[in-house]
Length: 101
Image (cartoon, rainbow, N blue to C red):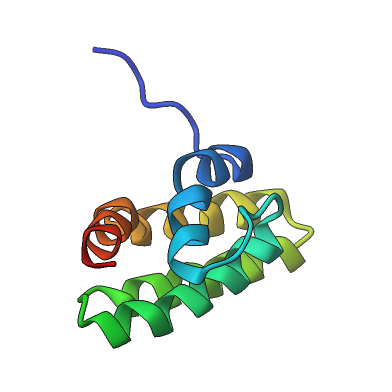
């Protein structure tokens, strides 16, 4: 059994930025701050489309903003992990949205 790769800001952007950018109708975010903003914009579009799970995305955005403003490395690690947990269905939601438009 191999250990899971650590969650990083780059891994979150690599995994989720393109899908969220599509839903937010913006260019793909390259920073955590921009990605958090796009998450909030995507929440509105998901809500309008009737796609469930937006509360988790709001929480993820909050954790990412807190991550971006923190200077404590331990806290940043925890915040990023929590954000990643809340983003686990973001790609499925983006795919559902893509199929609707």
